[in-house]
Image 1 (cartoon, rainbow, N blue to C red):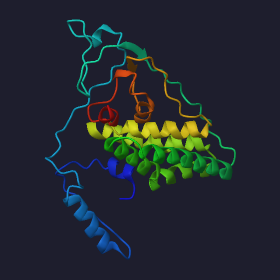
Image 2: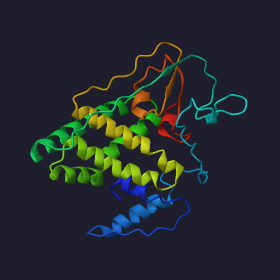
Image 3: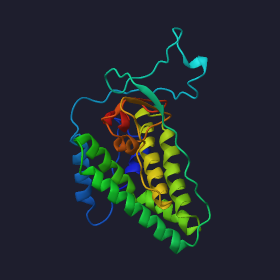
Length: 256
């Protein structure tokens, strides 16, 4: 229950019957608190969520098969409105990661420092913006502090793997787990995990987060856009964006 990614990987649906177990000196109080929280709706309220099927990713938008009979590329609208501007393609380069570490103590210290740097940046950013932005960043902070995720990364470091490789593998395991659930909403949380993976790897590489420089009226085209990338852009120059992956309930769509 302390692991956000562990709970997500359980793929519990609205209306499912679940069993809650607790152990320890405060087990009874813990059970009562968790049951009360779930039965209260966790503060969300409203009707049961409607299942949304995420659009299939487009492998290559240049292929004729991706076009409709009238020559238009069809998509799913995540945020309302009409935008006309100059298309700008966002390209990302992979962050090189070595597998073998420079010693367990060295790699443990490097991972701890990188996590602290990203945590500090997220906490600072969470104090700005609207409630949706604050809630999404709070969720990212919770994932960053996930004890199961950290334990898995430390287990790889103990095998003399580099901090970057350890973090990459730990995140990657949960990415595959969420993808395999067959749940569109959980599949859209994959972007959040990959976003945190990228941020920590950049911190380990000593790279600063830098936003793409866009001209006024730009429409950003990307295979996938991460929440931190969107929040880092100047909203005043961004006319709109279109991605091959994601869906209407992704955090990027909510931010939009």
